[in-house]
Image 1 (cartoon, rainbow, N blue to C red):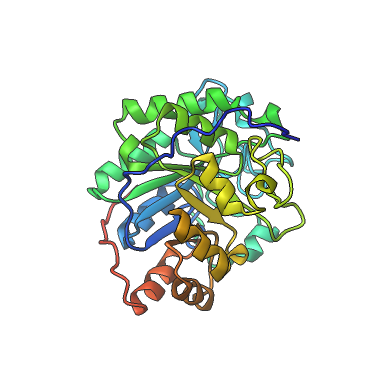
Image 2 (image 1 turned 90 degrees about the vertical axis):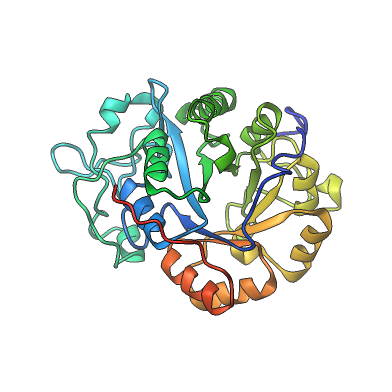
Length: 326
């Protein structure tokens, strides 16, 4: 449990960022439609038109950044060359080379799994591989979309340090790639583990940081009355028990809470603090409508097609489509 602010609050990040009036974000590329976090799903989102591609990253043993929600191979997604799904819990990427990672097929959900039941309409595309972040950046460039951004989540868990690089190495590798690709002005970095956000603010203050939180659950990552292992030593009890005030003190630009944790009162507080609010993960039109009417700055959804439709019905200007093939 963190008891002190190890990293210190870096300068407020992304203060000059350009955000759309309302941010339509395709969660994992839009996993209700196509295999998550793949070039297929991202190409589909670009082709329909979104403001932001939301994604997750891990790091291989040989230091390559790959796009994956889990810190390793997902038993509900990954099949080996023998056609069999990997056994739980799945090998962490830090134990695999990129060549080894590329051997796995993530194009079809495991039949009978909870995940498959959650997204019965996802279009399976066997033979789909786990992409690298470099491959995704190349796809965005090929699409010709000059405005779409990446919202990149560092998949790191303070309770399982053996499954990821250290925060310092993770952030160093990410920033090195973004700067090599000259893409740092097209991204935000998000995380539940605020240590990585503190490092981004220190090393690349031009990049907006997005503070992910979960309160309404059995395993919350943030508490109003104490620091947690996720909050890099920041203690909401020292900020009137307010999560938004704590994020502001930490130097964050955006609060990204689980959507059920948002209230009009918390949203109003964020307005006074100058924090943007982008909620995750909303898949029902009625909930999207209510949150838009409440005044959130953006929504992350597994159904970017439905989010576009709902936002359009509320009079929100929609991002242009940029058809591209993976």
